[in-house]
Amino acid sequence: MTISTNLTIFGGTGDLTFRKLLPALYTMDITGKLPEDSRITIIGRRDYDSSHYRQIARDWVEKFTRLSFEEKAFDRFSEKIDYYRMDFSRLEAYHGLNRYYRENDIHSHIFYFAVAPRFFSIITEGLKLVHGSSSGKVILEKPFGENLAAAAALNKELEAFFGPEQIYRIDHYLGKEMVRNIQAIRFSNPIFTDVWNSRYIESVQISALEDMGVETRGGYYDASGALKDMVQNHLFQILSIMAMEQPEEFSPKGLHDAQLDVFRCLQPADASSIESTLVLGQYEGYRGEPLVKPDSQTETYGALRLFIDNQRWKGTPFYIRTGKKTGKREIELAVIFRRPYQEVEPNILIIKIQPTEGVYLQFNIKRPGDSEDIIPAKMDFCQNCSLIHQLNTPEAYERLITACMAGERSWFSQWDQIEFSWNYISHLKELHAAKRLPVYPYRPGTRGPVEADRMLEQYGHSWL
Ligand code: BG6
Image 1 (spheres, rainbow, N blue to C red):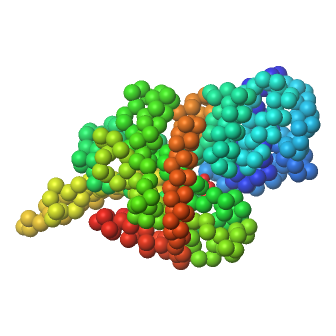
Image 2: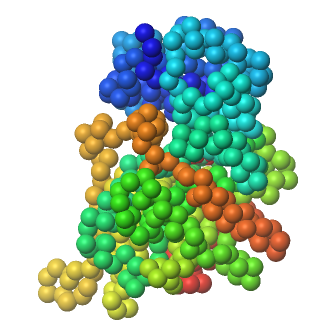
Image 3: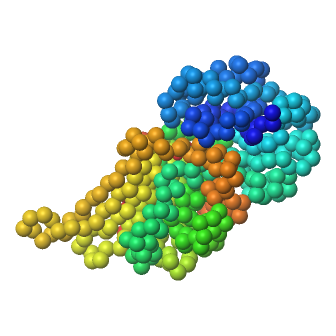
């Protein structure tokens, strides 16, 4: 029997596979989203056989599954998994992999590169060696290279083998429920659609705080830092969806073009105002984390102020901040409207991405009773407080793997978006370094360096 789809995961014994991919695939299986006759081939160097690997996978899935874990369901699911031991950095090894595919009648492929970007090229070469021309789709994990030049070269190589339409670059933020909801909130509510511009909006904030530090990922993180790890990919994707024009058509291309237009209009950072545009911080104790350089200048916190130079947004600042060890885990997008007159509070719309998923709206009313005072009323809609919504909302990886299987490309990053945002962030960092601006220390558990608060205060704003 020919297998309908085989998902080969390179990096099958890594953290991402255990924590995210296998639990997502398990949930897809029990909710009927994984085709009956699909298979999963796990590639790893360790000396396991399939049954040993399945046992290890079982414990991870039990721990990280979104839905309840059931032994029988897992057994059924695990029969789809095979472990294939190979050193994927050796080209000769790909002949054996090809034999394995032939013997198991596997002809339809999705390859998942859940490995560091330095291995993308050798895996592609190996597949090319045995397949000649491309056969299948490839899912790439971020980062897509270690710097822009390397990423561009890699991109060329991958596109030459797989073809641009078969490459799915994961940005798991695009799979988050409330990120996907931004379009619906913006474009299906005249109360927002018609005032979504600088005439009515004073500022926009995109805030992604994390309570955890770098944990075991110090090696990768120290070479990357908060701006490259979070801003240029996840938060810039959100920025572009928040700021884009309504796509002409609801197609991958429509969405992609609308997002790209936002990147094209990003006002370039300027050396003379870099101090009031970018604040970087590092949590105390970071330099003692495993694999982090003892004199590291890498930022674990970044706050920036930027403008989109088009008719819709001229004059409205977009503030972005992200940081590790900031005492809470919370991602929120806040839209602060201009006040009709100074004495009242502004209308505020907050789209809550995580851990709470929901929408908060603040508007003004008369104080109840005899008073004529104007006071803010606050409406707070929590979507994931409902168990039904929780059960029915796929986790980001479930959603994105399902989309890739269906050939649905809208919610993946496109190369030109990556190139734009990479250039923008590199330029920003260069200006910061050229002026020898400090990376401010901050205490773990606080909201980052006070300088980030001051940056907003000088413009009469504050983080919500
Ligand atoms: C990853 C970053 O892409 O996203 C991590 O590399 C970060 O540093 C993570 O912690 C945050 O993802 P989430 O889904 O937990 O918000």
